[in-house]
Image 1: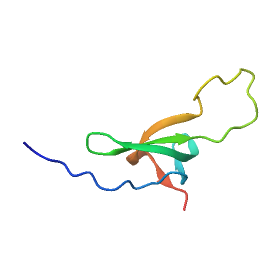
Image 2 (image 1 turned 60 degrees about the vertical axis):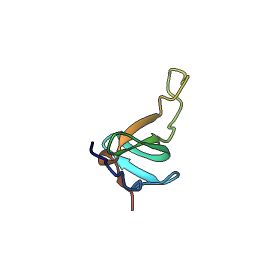
Image 3 (image 1 turned 90 degrees about the horizontal axis):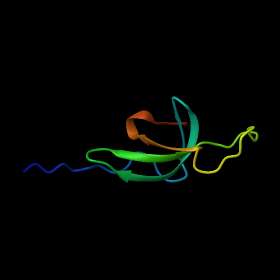
Length: 70
C-alpha cells in the first residue's frame, strides 16, 4: 500500500487569482486524490440579458490551472 502526502494548499481563501478564463477570488478549496482543487468566484459584470439563477460565476479549478495575480 502506498501513501501519498498532500502538501499545503498553494492558494488561500480570499486570494485573487488568474486563470485561462479570467480572474477570480478563491472561495474554498478541497483535496482531491493527489492535488488541491479551488472554488473560484469570477467578478460579476453588468447584468446579462438572462437572469442568473445559480453559481454560473463559480468554477472548480485544479491548482495547476491557477496562478497568483502578484
